[in-house]
Length: 67
Image (tube, rainbow, N blue to C red; front, side):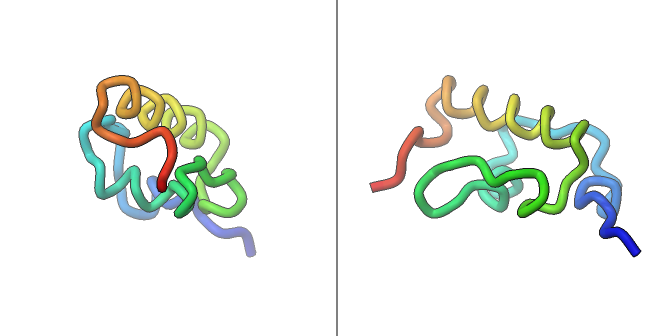
């Protein structure tokens, strides 16, 4: 039995770059984006997730690296 995508399980249709609590779940303590396999998301959701994280970093909402 395969694991279902986190976003499909929780019925999240749009991944928003302003939702920092949600994005924080998919970032390692070093500030890297978790892989789709480790994060438990589908490929389609992983692309949207990485785009949202990068947008949040560009806007200054998330740090590029953690100290």
